[in-house]
Length: 296
Image (cartoon, rainbow, N blue to C red; front, side, top):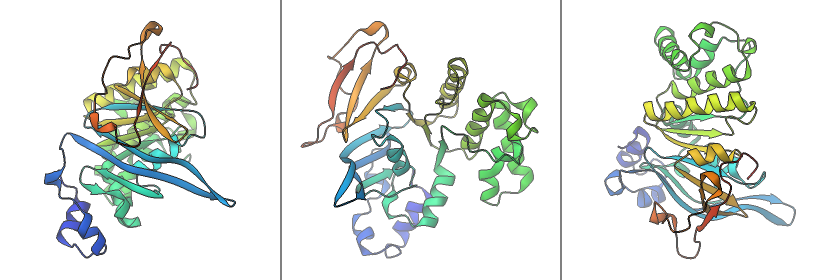
């Protein structure tokens, strides 16, 4: 399915420059089962005489409907990677495609429109506006695209009911508990009906019981809304419940196999052969004790 933005590039090949027209690949040549495709991704920051390289030559794909966990040490670049996937930041090199949209060639305005239509984002901090109610916060992305207020609020009410906050929708954000605030953030992320949900430590600030409830809700929403979801987490139990787990370590991606009871299975093949790229293989790793909670 071709997004409106990528269609604009096809119809106006000189709008973003000749190089874009030469390299843009029509949707027909994409594997429709793949929603996200990353090629040769590099991110570096200038720090003194030598650049600080977070990661380099990352290659991976995420298929429609997958729920993928990304784990790794603090500072490994997990949040930065999510920002690149959401077109919130630009890579130093490499390309990110969401379906047929080439994120690296979007203007700032096109990237904002793309995020508003295609991506739901949940942060560790909920970032709700305290002077607004839960309903107003959940409706904010729709109001930002100038949707009429009655329509936007009707959609937001529907999502708030779905996350169990029907009785709290007229309370100010500061009057809600941490778990309730994160559920409002989930409703806000999904009110635009995105295809891709990105969650950066969505349970990181919650106690174990509340974290379990929020993740259980996220799992249900992933299925009922037919999402493709990528979660950054330090919670290995949450990672184990995702369909696939990738570890970002020393600038490289490794696929982990997390099992209950600490059992290992190194014989299972990677579910997506395209994850392996000559010259920069993704390492298969079995992770013992995957049913415990801790820091990856």
